[in-house]
Image (cartoon, rainbow, N blue to C red; front, side, top):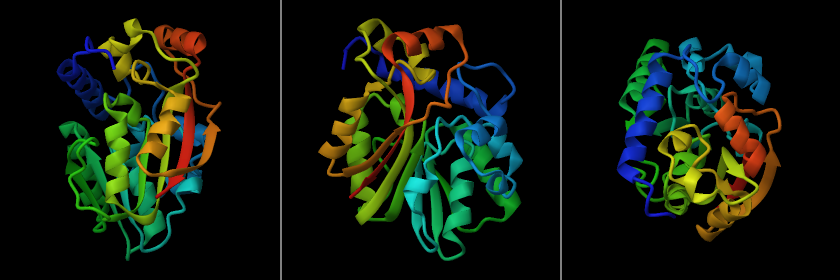
Amino acid sequence: MANSLDVDKLERVVKSVYQDVAENPDEEYHFKMGRELAEHLGYPPEHLDQIPAEAIESFAGVGYYFDLAGIEEGNDVLDLGSGAGTDVFIAALHVGDTGSVTGVDMTDQQLEKASTLRDDAGLENVSFKQGYIEDIPFEDETFDVVVSNGVINLSPDKAQVFEEAHRVLVPGGRLAISDITSEEVMPESIKNDEDLWAACIGGAEQIDRYTTSIEAAGFSVTDVRENTQYEFISDRASNACEKYGVKSVTIGATK
């Protein structure tokens, strides 16, 4: 990766954007948000009806992967970059009382919002933890399923994220993610633009490199599908999509 991307600045910019997403979901961003987006991506309305509406307000996912995650009752699930908690709360519907769902996020405001919503809903098998997806704060082989939605592209070290996901999964565990990738390798001018990273574009990895990184971590990739219903809304983001084939994909893999 180019040395001229300021990783510390990137973290500050990303935190700032997603702090706003938590606190001001009605503002305008490069990307769509909320319940309309979730339904458009394939989230069943009857599932959305069962989780806190305020979480869905701040939903900024890029795909629907639950059909690939194969979450079963009693599973322990980890969500990387859990935001305001939409996917964590959806996963909790699948694991039942005997399972657990944990969300990890680096943005305090998202964690506070998600934790408050969890407490208000009385969900004892749901927890949220401050942390970085490149350094997951859990022991080896802790989870049955690891999920992530629109987040790994924000990491400057994706290979490390996949290695960490592999480490915390039990043998035979499943990885299910939706994320932004690109058809072509991004030019340095875009890769070094922190604002475009925060918009989920600057960090979009070329799709073949992306899946190769997953397999290099020890996974077998089982499914790759394009989420054609996802689209960016700002002109700047849309231009990059057209020029470099930036797109949302959903990927399933097993350890």
